[in-house]
Length: 225
Image 1 (spheres, rainbow, N blue to C red):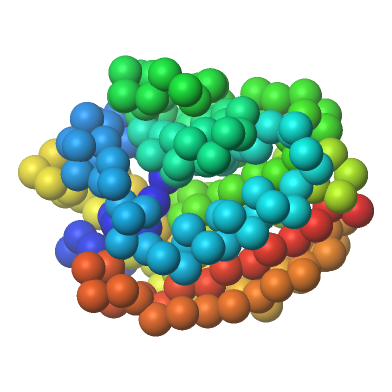
Image 2 (tube, rainbow, N blue to C red):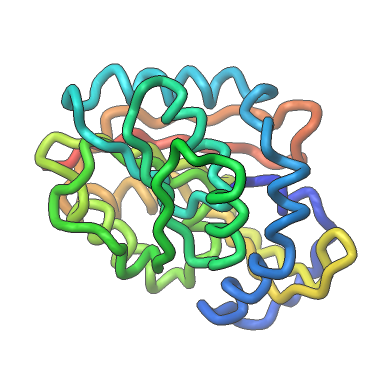
């Protein structure tokens, strides 16, 4: 999914998040999310450049996974470059919204901690503002699963908000939700990737664009060993 949820009001004392509440919350906002953010990449030139670099370096002819794809607009951008793009999301509502809009993308419903994909199925993968919903103890498992579904030498691009903050939403665009958004430390996440069999090749940060939430963004590009 994306980073736009961080634009919403947040409380400072969030309850614990869980898979069921994340799924239910994204099911609730799926249609509005898809309508509002379908062309979001048009306003993110750096993200587009990083995605293009990822595609250029992947093994020719291999599929690319969008992990936590939401309604599939990033996967559709990838597919528009002639790639077999596979979008995977926990939310059945998001997957349904994506299938209605982007016939060129293969969508699968599934958990980031137990991806519905074979070992070494993908030449590259992206996880853009999706691991922010995981409990801290599950980040290692997410790294291991990403590594499992990548081919040797496959690249993973991760994007997230920088920090230690946890934001919680009870309401989003007028809908009742129950979502935690965890900002992450780039050094910690880079360390987890290295420990789980990746080599981190690029680490960078940027300020927010004017239309984004006022958070600092980080990107890690890691290669599976």
